[in-house]
Image 1 (cartoon, helix red, strand yellow):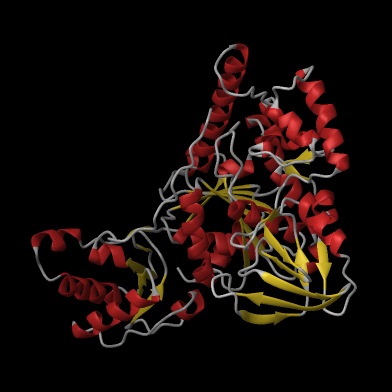
Image 2 (cartoon, rainbow, N blue to C red):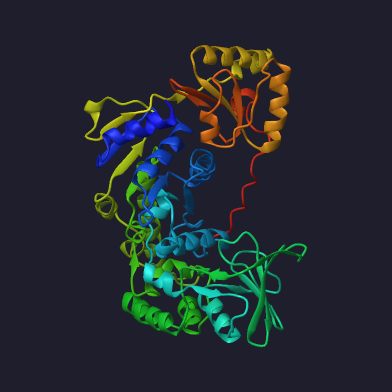
Length: 492
């Protein structure tokens, strides 16, 4: 099925309120998300794609770079901490979230279709309103008068962290008339050079070498935290905390720290107390359609069960004395998270698309069914285990695909592995191995050639018109995996 055929097939079934896309294994699901986004997305209304977890979010983001180069993909990950935790989400996670919130809160800057790529956990968690995000923006340009005290107040209120040297998004440092800061969402930190009250230049720089990499004409800052900490929000927090939990003693470090105007580790778990209102992600994003990854609904149910369990544990611990840890007074789940009923109500007003790799009879669901006819591709594990020549087996399989009229693409993990595999394939008789950098180039392939793409698929897939063979299908599991971040110790 060509991309045009897929769009036509989708368009003929639209505007269905509920669509079940079947026969869409990993890879083909990303292609279908891209085409649904082209159909539904508007500059003022993105398409939300809900993945089941963070691993799937990363894989889908990589796949959409290949299948949707014409669309803007914004990541909105969930916090990397447990419900009712004592730790705050990591600065990089918050930076991605606030950058996406700011991008969508200012629709005049959106000129093309947008896919918001998120997770089941993130979809259930309430966020500040658009008005709060817009009011928390800050902009400056060379030649303008810049009040340094006003800038420092903005940084303190919006979650930036003063350090000696900027390293992570949200860090800032001051040396005389120079301000270094790492804006959320930016690839590098920037250096502001001030002469008196005049901003002379804005330069991006390498945080390791400290060398300038480019000059910038403008700086736009978004909050480095979802908690805005100023006199108004502190007063609101104090009132709300007392209303929710009653009298406060001097043994409550959270209340004491916020009252003194200091940020506190884990304060984000009381987010609703700092803002006049918090809203669902769906209400904030105002999507034109919501697309669910395979098993995303199961992940939503599991998350709601987890939230309930951790809340009950916090309440039980609070009722016991002598545990040694400072008191933890949890907000009720409804203040922080959507319920199952909330989730259904929030999404029922816009088209919904669910994706599964399996086929399903139409009689088994009330959804409109759209079958993509895809299936998992061939693995060469048997040849590897038998000690045979896997490349001869690959060539024979490619010849079979070509005889069936299917364009064939080998998906490699990196540019380096693509170069190595290109030489190996040519050594084994596949002499025409062009590089393809996106889906448009893949579709333009001659049907008798093999394209090589950088596309991180765990397994290949195919349907009646094309086939993707994953590097891992041929060579086996990768020996080098991404190093997982060490889990932070959690004091429950």
